[in-house]
Figure 1 (tube, one colour):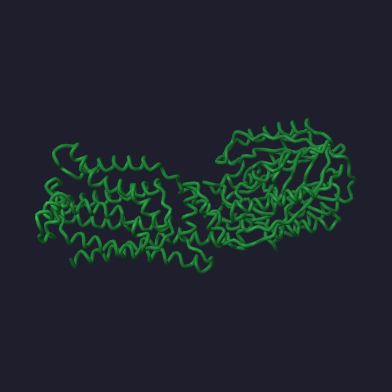
Figure 2 (tube, rainbow, N blue to C red):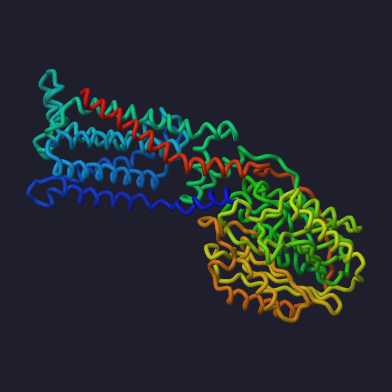
Length: 625
């Protein structure tokens, strides 16, 4: 993950799950009652509270209950929870503006009740603008269509004020007795309203309509301006991304996958399977490595790829991290089916053998490669620990595997151990191993040296032991559902342990602490799955950052001892197939992240400029009328 991508991921901390609609409505009525006590003076506190509930709370309740059906009728997808929270927020805007206007009349001479109602008009128009922006973002309809559900709260408040302010008397032009009776009953209720409403006249409603039109145009211009770079470079709308991003984190929807599918590209990726079976042909363990990245976050795309892959194994599943970055994120969870089917096809083609080499370790520069040969195939892991590294790019992994095969091996399962990083620091380069870098050539050379040494090493019968603890830690603590898994190989008088932790990278130094604490083996390596279910609400949530490192080290030491006791003779075999999938594509992740971050950094300033311009025009309109 680059710094740009990290900035994007960190935005998730601002997303929260919308409360139930009835909770928002109840709180809105409470706020309205309190505001009524402060705004009205009927002589009785309960009467003041009731007037607040009626004149402030009723429009909020109407908006909470009607916005969703109106929006959905017009092709939108606003939920009741979201519409109620939006109505509550807009009620807060009205209360805040009215309170500020009331305070201004007390502090400054010359400001009267007319100023307060001018502020009310501005507040109701602002509510319409805010609702229009949110409906546009969530429902994805045109600005004209979105204006209909967006106007519900403002219109409800305007109707109440129109009826109870006595404005109808300025518009009444005569009629028969039935018309007069109907109007008196339904449209003229000034005697039942607070006397403060008597200051409102018919022209105020004309001003409200003009301001709503003005603010609506301002919202449209704002959206079009920030959306243009997305349409030019990605061919999609920023609102589609925003709707999916918020929907996934706040409501658990899969709308974000629909967006990613629009920008995705077709790719062919190798899927390598290394399986171990007992003498009775029952499966003991299975390593599965699709060369895709388990992202972008949560359950979206391939975010929970490790769990899905591990569940397909009859024995204990080991899904290490592949040499691939965020450009190889799957766009939808549906793409996982292609990966799993390909893995099953490769598994069916495996030919088993009974021998393997003891482990070897090679190092060139910062790159370290650890692994073994199983017959004519290789299991290799790559790390730059104790240095810092994040993802090894797809092309680098393919090249390193090709270098390893040059020693005469057939298939190579090259895993990125992904076990030492310093998180999202201030530097732009967070440790990516990209083509053309010195680190990439170091890795290729280290893979070639390890393969050469393994080709010259005598193979012996294999004994394998496994152990697993799902742990009590949760994704928010940096540990995914697979917990910690251990495989111990005994080859002759040599032993090797592979520790796989279901998490996204590891705190600096923790990998070395774990290896030092493991007893009874000759060498070991610690890997993480890069499972992105741990990154739903935090961009940085590495293994060891939120949990006790001492407890994790002790747990792994116990699991290794358990796996050693579980060792038994096995056969091993490896096969590789290719899967056709849709991934983010070259540079799309960085482009998406940079655009989103630009909206965040520049959108606030642009929004401020739009608001100032709209308010300035509003003042001109008030002076002219």
